Image (tube, rainbow, N blue to C red; front, side, top):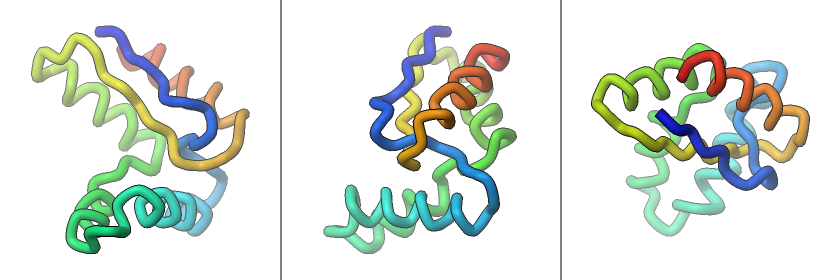
Length: 91
């Protein structure tokens, strides 16, 4: 399975759950705030931990997906490397 990483302007992950939730919430509100119901659904399903990202990749692989785009949501360039490492060892 090929895994494409999203643009590095927004990246999944950060240290501390509160910061993760804050980044995720800001990202979702900026992109889906026009529809509060959709925004709430996206926020509930957004993988915000290493394990959750691994599980999302594995789920897609198990469904036969041959390309999966990960779209990060925190602005921190070192997190792109972290996300790439997760994707490389999971795929």
